Image 1 (cartoon, rainbow, N blue to C red):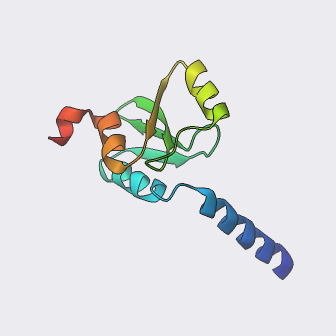
Image 2 (image 1 turned 90 degrees about the horizontal axis):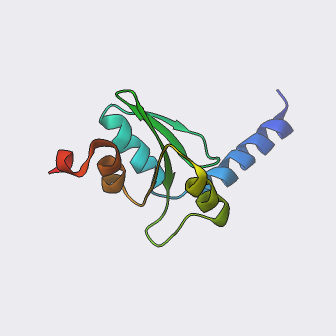
Length: 102
């Protein structure tokens, strides 16, 4: 085993994980709990989500944050379903509809 390569991989993985928005893990867990298939794709947006034959691209942001310039340009050009969410409730409302959460 190449310990230097393993150490580099671990350091790189931790650096990338540190940049992810802190709410992302709870959003992924909530979506999976209601039956969504969730893939972390990171680029161009954070998540690829599907449920009952429908698909969404989701960007997870902290409450005070907005998409970057390149993310917003992508969102503006994308013809499919794209949602920017700041918490689990927004994510679930986007996928299930607000009425489903009442």
